[in-house]
Length: 498
Image 1: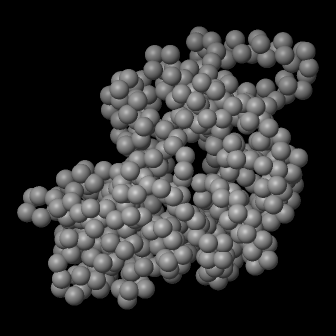
Image 2: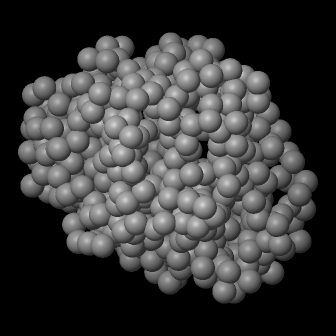
Image 3: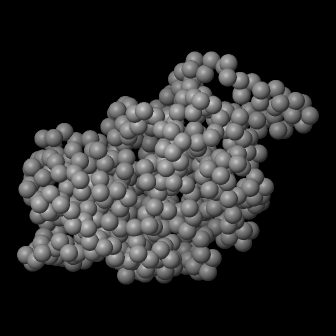
């Protein structure tokens, strides 16, 4: 059975200045491919790093001549999936199957589309394999669990089976389906690693809590491959991509289960021994974990700080951690010699400039080595989207192709853009004031009043900041795309410096 997996790996934004030169590895797509290949099916990946022209897409699919088409869909790319699925059906006549996060969160929306024949709800490896097996054997597949099947204008909604409890039973991800020359991580000598599935926490901006609801059993939803199998996973990646000299471990929280973590770290030091980054969580930080990370070669640990305002953290985004806990975690990281990165958001419900200033100032105090800021986007099927809908905070036109913001009288769009544009400079400024003692405190009080003022020329200041940022990002992007070797050397220098 010939299977074409279509992976639209681009942002559906009209504001993109140019098509991407690189795409990104997708763990789910690779896992589905591995299971299909293990069952003897012929799998091809159509990895789209930019919106394709119709004729190009048709020609590529016709060259494969698939018996079935599988699309991986994020919520943000769903409108584009519909367009591509329609072209694919006309070009090949093969049935269209849509899986991924959006199919699990919104199967009604997916199966309401005439371009789609089947939606896969939940983990898709085995349901999709069973469907392909049935098609190859000429059997009826419409009763397979996890599949929502369109038939004669109606939808057959089969029950969802339990999630895979033991990830070790899955074959190792298929890397051979990719064109390694367009994988961004590989171009900068970095291997993307994901050893687990699920998260036990219920942050309201994340779809994880809703994904969990798709399964009949929700206990032990967060699962890891065993330490030994995790090392096999990494060794397989390194065998496929021998240029890799760094690993980016993207699991939500690597040190989530301590017994697993320490066993994994010992094996990692013995059999892998490469510099890596990972994610952690403030309320779990301990000195012995940080020391183990450093000893194993971790050169950057990521934290989701999100908001510096305790009220926002506790009542809006459900991150139950106090300022003292956050500051202590960063202090312990500095003592251990472990650089940190913080993820932050602006434009959250019930936020204003004064509350966002708390995010600026806590970053100034904890002094992360790297800082990431994103504008809050209320993704459908999350608890925070529901809150925004109830409180009528959603913009009149809210799509995935435009940069849109919540409608909040106390935090208008111009102010959100200002906070976004001057986030890092403001942090650096308050860090300097923090070193000036009483004079710094007096200047900080005056600066607070200036920052909070609604009379600032926000739009003009944003235009100035964007011009400078465009120059910086353009240079950085040029180095990443055209001189990946130089990018790696600069990172080597930064890692040694840290």
